[in-house]
Image (cartoon, rainbow, N blue to C red):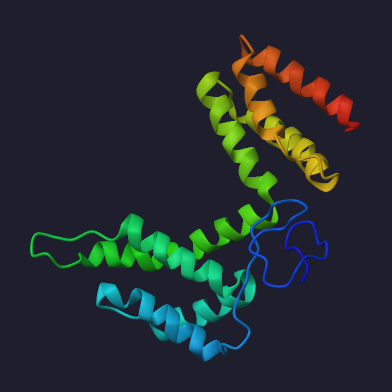
Length: 195
């Protein structure tokens, strides 16, 4: 079996890569696509509704694109975060609609966090920096591009562990945004990233 992130050969059925630590997508091979859809329908049956024909097509697309286990996790996440009971102790129609509309986005974010963790970490760092300093749109765009290049460099060179915490420490240790931007420029130079 090949790791979804670093593409190195790992033991079949492993939940995590023993090289980069990325969570793996382990879907039982013996299940057919129709059985997977039936399982997904079973998970959402708690709402009293099921996937429409369009929803079933979306599920098939998500299974192919993200994997069955990520789809199941996404359904469970959507149910736990967005499903709300009304006054009559039944789930509200608005919350059920919200659950069904969120599943695909949650699946995409979970898949991205596994295969390209640097993308979600760039968002995390920029959100933290926006709260720490006033950063305008143009500065945020440049910062996001720089962080993406830096974290991608560390990810592809297998030096990713601890780098996000290091960059967050740079934010915390800077007295203003200009000092932080200067530290990012120095980090870019140390990584050999131009521009």
